[in-house]
Image (tube, rainbow, N blue to C red; front, top):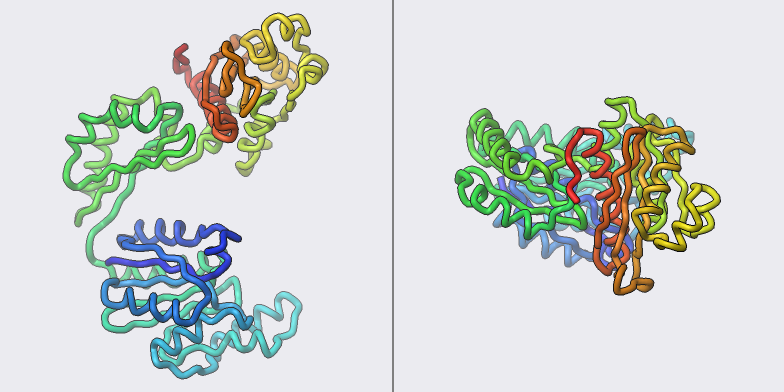
Length: 417
């Protein structure tokens, strides 16, 4: 089954909001065995909607639309669909009862505007929205299924999970699509590609490889497509073993998981605690760690020691060491990592000190120079890196590299100079 995804809304086109719906829908459909052929964003414009429906009717098995189903005048998707499918508008009693019950639970009375949400094209199949008032709509014509859903993410996701996917799964008897993701940190995409070139070229025809890079991280996604799920799973496992034998030092997870989530799971599993002392990263390591639910079980706190005075007064860094070696030095970052661990009584301490830029670099320490240290009661390991001249990327890469150094120390993996 081939599919197109359409997001409707001027707010997307002018950059006011980011379209996260398409990515999520594509992921869910793909796991069901649906192949996404196109994703398109269009304006809240009657003719644009009609043109898009015409474009996709002849070439797609499934067209999924989100947006424009609200109760206000600028939400025109429902009327456009009614025209395209030559529908008359009727009040759907099931939807009306659902809307009334929803408002009653929330302590509001049903207004005429909200009642309009129950008026739907007569030839659509309503898809229940358990989280809101805008019902989804399912149309079929000329062998193509059209599904329209609200653009509010949590409402859309509810309809996809409760209504759309179960219907599609009962219809699909074609290929199985299985993904396997390998997460790497600290090795650029081009270097990674060179390391696994021979393995990639020898991949079976059933498996395709995709490189999904972002600063500091490269996801390797293997996709197996075929009729037999068990056969494909075995094939992926065999190729995963071969791949890990080549790049095991660069891999932090064999599932699609963030490094901060992996670290959190590892610390909880081993009942270990962590604190951070951050200079150039400005609290970004702490922010990434606390973005994970349940991080209070292992993350104790942080000192953002941006100035030398804070390094000296709060972390006990020697003033002489700062003057003799500089704040961006092995001596200083080691003291920061050791002292924050002692100060906060944690099993590990991470420290960063660097020149994020765009100014402040010297010939000896150019912009991007960053020292990172990880301390435990047994040892403290510090390494120097150069993360480049882009300030944001330097901070992100320093954050990820810090967490990956911690991972290696916990797991007893050598951290190479």
